[in-house]
Image (cartoon, rainbow, N blue to C red; front, top):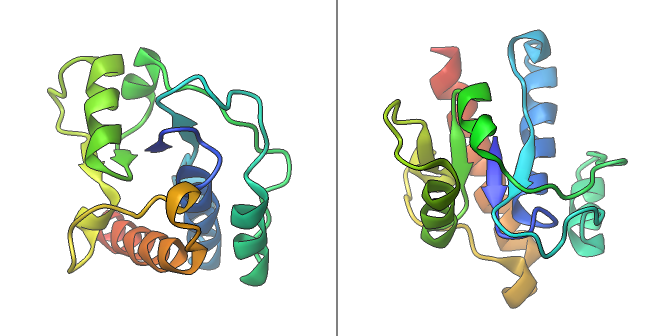
Length: 146
């Protein structure tokens, strides 16, 4: 599960990029991939139009996706809970409590350049977010296919 603040930019981009990579690898039956928000601000809203356009530039659709908030039950449902930045990680812990199974990670921890995925809501730079998301998702796929 990919998690960001509102579930309209970074985490849905990661959700649909990961779904695309997994499908291209022929492994879609092995993964459950979703995304959620830590806040309630955007619940029910569609993917933010610039994020939707960035995905479409790469042939990836996200039709039907609506923002939802992460719940404590998500911790039990998913093997990995991937936050986009340290603020997301703090809020994931607020929602889930402790992380006894060490499921919670930053997306860029799966790359050779750990850090935070820039929030395009503030930067407007969806190209940088695309690169970060793609690199992180590729890293997750490599690690989970080992």
